[in-house]
Amino acid sequence: MKVLIVGSGGREHAIATSVAKSPRVDKIYCAPGNAGIGQLAECVPIGAMEFDKLAAFAKEHHIDFTIVGMDDPLVGGLVDVFEAEGLKVFGPRKNAAILEGSKAFSKDLMKKYHIPTAAYENFDKAEDAIRYLKEQASFPIVLKADGLALGKGVLICNTLEEALEGVNSIMLDKKFGSAGNKMVIEEFMTGREVSVLSFVDGKTIRIMTSAQDHKRAQDGDKGLNTGGMGTFSPSPFYTKEVDEFCHKYIYQATVDAMAAEGRPFKGVIFFGLMLTPGGPKVLEYNARFGDPEAQVVLPRMKNDIMDVMEACVDGTLDQIELQFEDNAAVCVVLASDGYPVAYEKGFVIEGLSAFENREGYYCFHAGTKLTEKGIVTNGGRVLGVTAKGRDLKEARANAYKATEWITFENKYMRHDIGKAIDEA
Ligand code: AMP
Ligand code: GLY
Image (cartoon, rainbow, N blue to C red; front, top):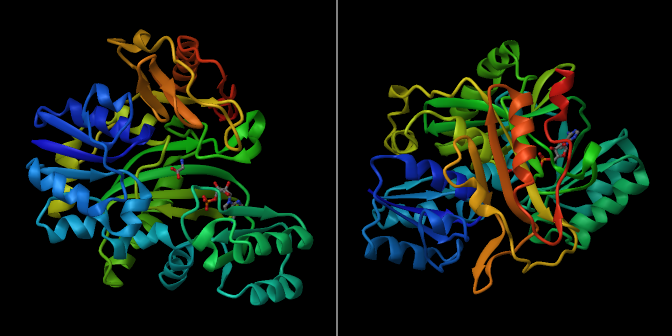
């Protein structure tokens, strides 16, 4: 098979690493890819939003199977463009990717189908949101821009004043662009967060092993929200009881709800869950693998990823059982100091070769670029260093050891990824 992967981050590097393991695959292309992906795949300089160019490339190079890793092209309808050209492609169509693309849509869906989530109201006018906040809200309260905002469109507001400022920045100043044309205001919940990824074929859902992300920039969950500073898998807080509850009230219910709405979902549904005192609730859905969740979940998956993804497209996922290794993995993101606000890039990265032929260690590239000087930093999140271990403690020690193999001038990381497991 010839496979094309669309995207350029650590998640796509993790997907490419799994695809490369499949004996069914003899050639991988990635658009646009990055320096690490380039070691496994041929990177092609086509952007993820250049739908016509991507489809033309896939036809010209006789691509058998395309995997869309990123949210923007999914929400924008890349899968529909490929399908119209008769190309086989993994990911939800535009009318299903709305599960991630519009928080107002996903909240209404959950309400209609009784899927547990925080109480909320949707707004498309700032003055209505302001009136609601002044008359009915209790604090803290959560404001969410409706559309895609790089994981940064959520504001937790402790006072009315903060919330009014939030409405201003989302709906009037358009801090997140058109993502703020609508807004959700929802109840503040407390509890542990868990990310659960799944494969879906329109009808059947298969749950992957659990993971947990660390979204804040600094140790102790301080600082600004980022795309994710590190992950561990499995989550010790995702117990058998939680799993049973979610199977009963959340997973299949979501797949059935999408089908009933005439929006059958094929691809990956990412359930962002909060384990509240009142039981697990859905914080958000994503229509793709998490980044950096994929970097700890996929290395532990035993199945041939091509078999699973093809079953999703063909509607035969009921014939697949997912299998995961009975171990653990931790991913520590090496970022550029200053991320997510302002940072320098273009620094040479040393030590990458230490990962070659080391079983159980991975260095997934996120923001890197190959230049005449060698591989240099090219983004806020630069690398994701993943290590496995027999349990979370060992995986964590291994991952932090491996972070020392890499050096670049403004290297920054959190030192407490997976620390929560000590409390489990
Ligand atoms: P989201 O992009 O919807 O996952 O939100 C980003 C982060 O904001 C989540 O990972 C939570 O930490 C936090 N968050 C979102 N919604 C709520 C809520 N209703 N209550 C408390 N925290 C929330
Ligand atoms: N790690 C969270 C996300 O991918 O949205």
